[in-house]
Image 1 (cartoon, rainbow, N blue to C red):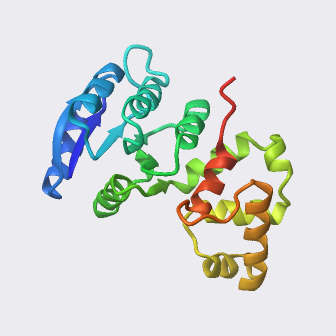
Image 2 (cartoon, one colour):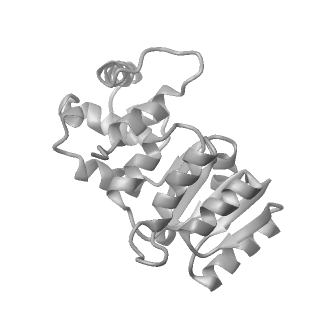
Length: 217
């Protein structure tokens, strides 16, 4: 597995590179800005990119915008965002760009090296890894959206737990309801979000991504 690291803080960048190398992941490029990320992804076609949100020159959302550009130029290029911040607009755009190979973790909440490496591998393999706090913040900021209004309060709770990767039985236990009730809520969520059954798409992931999608206009 090959990785690109886009992080402007030199010591942190080196630390991440060392962790990945020790885990048997080859770091093919380390860059400190958005254009460098895009160039590295195009050149190396890496299995995953670990990207900070705020990078030079403005330290606002350059990393996320570069990640979106990289996925446009190299379709479905896996991206794991590792940041201190939840940047609403471009985070939603990145998540909505596809259900495969996307992750968003908060630096301060990564407490275990093995879990971080597992998240890197999961995203590289086409999976989705979302910190529950990221989901919570985006849900709160989108609370007035018509899409959210179409869901009942209980369905919103179920969807938030789905975003944490919980199974129906785990959701039922957390909400103190039956598994059958959760199955009905999940089916209703899929229906309201326009997600019919399919043999290839992961509807649980697509439901979260559709819900978090931010209007870029």
